[in-house]
Length: 156
Ligand SMILES: [Zn+2]
Image 1 (spheres, protein in one colour):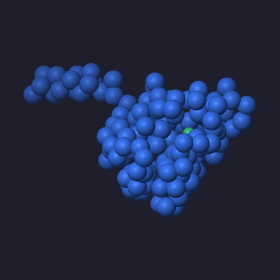
Image 2 (cartoon, rainbow, N blue to C red):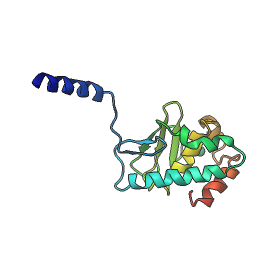
Image 3 (cartoon, rainbow, N blue to C red):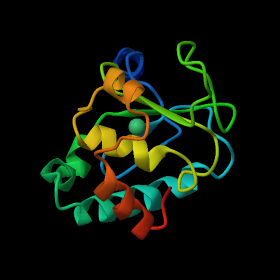
Image 4 (cartoon, rainbow, N blue to C red):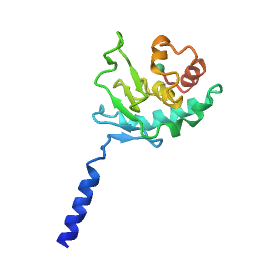
């Protein structure tokens, strides 16, 4: 009995070391790291649902119809303030997507009020256009239909 308990404990301990404990997640597989502002997680699923509804309206980018599958294993990192610096750009950011690391950084305003829906569109597009292009074209001039779809869902 004691030996079995010890073995089980060792198995659990060895399995647990490589796993990250997340504050919350979404049905499509977004994983939100600690720390998060109080109540932030409560708005995550509704935001994801609304973003996917918005993306389904976009006629000119078929990648967005597979948005949910593209969110799997992406980490969301909620910052301390509503905007933050990436240490590179000379202006504050409300959100940023690091495609290589599969990480989304967003300000700490509630999910539906911040940049998360916008960043999820980048994820659904497989991060194309990539950040250098975004830097040259911060308004995403080819995103007219995406912006319209987000507005139709009441998202920024
Ligand atoms: Zn963007």
